[in-house]
Image (cartoon, rainbow, N blue to C red; front, top):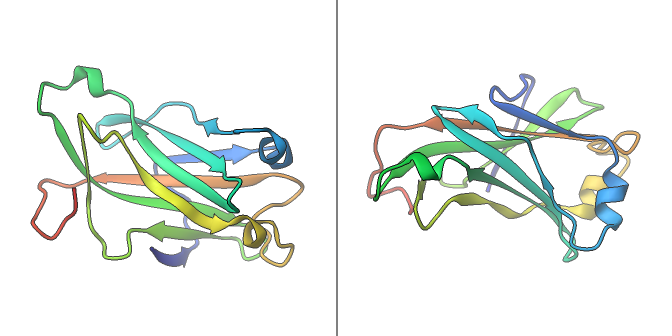
Length: 151
């Protein structure tokens, strides 16, 4: 995973969680965002504080029923987490800059271990402020899928 920082908010979607502690304490908890549009397709974010000590974040393509048999969508995906103290976003991308290919058998992509829960909850990082946090995503369509990209 490649991690960087930037000041600008995500262009496509932001998910604000007002009561993270309720999500964390619930058994088998998961948040599914509203459906949003980016790069000509409909998507949603799935966020889960895993009991193995991490936050997982995935993007799901939602308009698969409209595609013809053998459909394929190639994108660059960037996830975001807001740092309230530094007033910037931490960005998470595939380590090698590979594109992601969505198709009939693969409608979800993301990170099972985006960030350790203990780092997320540390007071000096301030991703969590007054029990609220902000995640985001950018999904950029790319015209083709090369041999260097993964499936």
